[in-house]
Length: 387
Image (cartoon, rainbow, N blue to C red; front, side, top):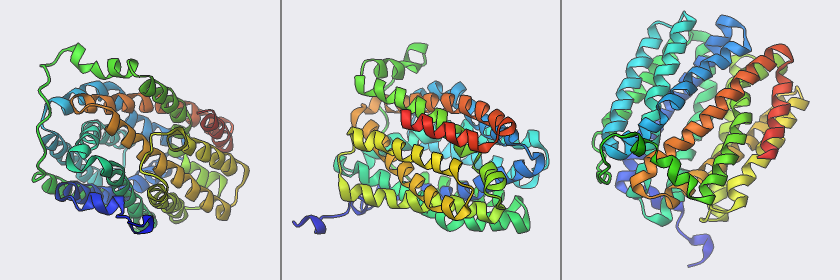
């Protein structure tokens, strides 16, 4: 068969009925996530006017990963992963509906962010771990590309609408949309049939921390750990404080902030299409680590220019780096790690990433308030180049 007529990896993955169900559920919940993300950062910045308070919101999303990550990985490997995902979705729906009606106090917003993240700690490694059971091995990259493409297309379409909705109707409706999306996702996932995970011994600290031992025994996984930690030291602050960059450096409001998020989404949508044209083998330094070079260059450009027009294509390039890097990372782990410990490995990397991200946000929020947001982006770009 001529290469140009070869079946699309994304199309192959979506042809699998069980993966298609996961894909639809994930896409619907991503719609709600987009409204929630835009509303949350705008709300906190309007309530406080402080970059460090905005960073505090993200910090409350990170702490549960550090506290619960290893336990969540064990739960994902020991219990039925579909049940774990459904329970997490229903819990997040309850929090979202509560936030829709009570969002005037900063402490409640922080508590909601903490609750969302606590449940996502269980949902995310479960969803990542089931993919190899839903598609053929050659379609793992296509499956990850499909999930990322749907997520970022949702961002492209909905982020500007979310910004406009918050500007004209306030954040309440955006949070309600998020709650409804979690309910719909849970309904779809209740009928997702997957094999039960391999038998895992009952809870012991040895079993909970098994992922750490697996990583230490693998040179590839150890190197990936170091790179992820350095990259998170950059991305934590720059992603959390994008709203501050928009309002203080680029001098734009909520609607334009939505367009900045959409620019990232456009680039991230292009990333999977580019990746599937180039290769199905993503376990190479070019595809695993090259995206950090691209993103670092973008951060330096954002620090150097206050032009909104210039920032839009730069953030598009950032989106390409984000999606291609994440697809390569997820696919490499799914192919290199045994199913019996896959949940714990994904949870371990979540802990590594979020621990470094928390440190980054704390330092970045302080620097943004004391020295300005451009210093944060300049330092973030330098760290990504090092990674």
